[in-house]
Image (cartoon, rainbow, N blue to C red; front, side, top):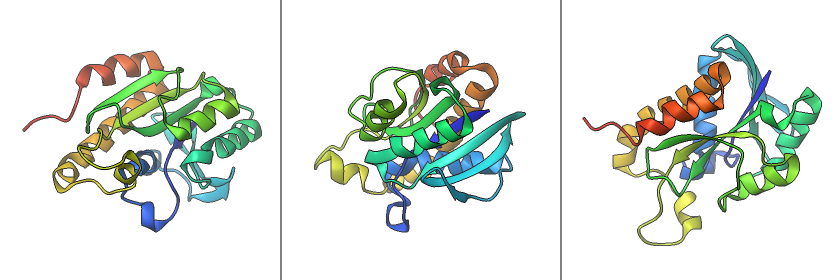
Length: 191
């Protein structure tokens, strides 16, 4: 069993924000896994499915980004999992828009959702990082809580698909394999 967590903020007003990239990828995985309906559980919404032949629980915390650890910790405890059974998908300011990277453990890089998860279960969980880039002007907070640009929206489907592919690879073959595959591909493909 793997716990796959997408980070974001709950509510329709946040749905298309950059900070909700994790939710968007988990929604894609929900379709791929032919998962059960979303149900309120673990201080979030959760669904179970089979992803690439492996049983997974998908989770979208409803605690808002900065308190994501509460939801993840509850799921880990109730499912009887260890941190290495958890994979978290999140937006990343330090990657250019469209870059997708996989990583095992490490720091939070200033991401408040990861900071809270690490404080709750420790740092030894896998991550799939979805690059959103940094703002050219304005504050980071207003940037992450804004929608993708028109140009970004054109390639967003490909970015989400590649992030979901990285998660599938991690589930089937391990995070190291996902790192080798996803990290070698770089940003969005040019047409």
